[in-house]
Image 1 (cartoon, rainbow, N blue to C red):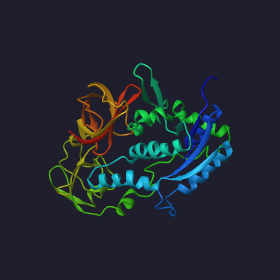
Image 2 (cartoon, one colour; image 1 turned 90 degrees about the horizontal axis):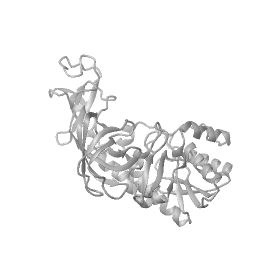
Image 3 (cartoon, one colour; image 1 turned 30 degrees about the vertical axis):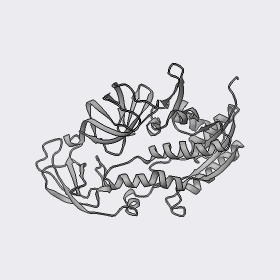
Length: 373
């Protein structure tokens, strides 16, 4: 083994992925230190906040592995850098992805800085992604995780060269079933723990109930494509494009729904008019108002530090979707804007979400969707 042994600080979340990450690095002979990040503290005593349970699980893992663990509170950073932006986006009628911002601002900035102060040479997390150094370009590349069902490169697309140079993703080389198998084999206490779902600071609580605390309600009309009022919405911030649950108009039928509809076709949120405080809905999953062949994105971030050349690529306009063939127009520089054209229309392209570009297994970066047509 000629691999240089390093001091590696691992973000231990209490979940099985980060636990196996720490184990694999220790097996490779590295000096491993665990850090539990507390990013939210407004609900410590609530039934929805699992932070205390997660720390107990992380500490139990550290004990089994024989590594140190430190509890670090990044809640103030999180509120300033992630949550404030999350609320601004919702109040503007967009649907942000706070996990993307959390990775860029907390896990690979605040956490990375803290780890460096501890003398770490690298950090590691339990994300399903990979980092590769390209000798030809002299740059680090962000690659998809080998398990296509668990790949998290979408959430990591804002990472830059400096961050990637300091980062390891050991479980990105494995399938989830293998990670679970390793955890059970070595007797980790969280081997069977369920994966966390949803936004970190919301947990399992109803989303609208959570937003109600921070965003005022401004009810207004729900209209169909012909302008008829079908009901009343509770505030445009509480709805997202493509949404079909919780509209309160399930019993309303559109006798004239000619396009992808019919009497019993479900209703979907298709547009939000902030100026008129109106929610527009259509019947049928494939209604033209829900389909877009182009999108514009801004607030861009490219992994290489420079925009890719215009041309043919693949993209995701939301996390849980297959890569879609597309053509990139002028990508501009970091922070600039770009346009994607799709040969096949994309469904419910949502302002505020991320449009992430791929060249095969390489994640190039992306931006925040501003508009679609």
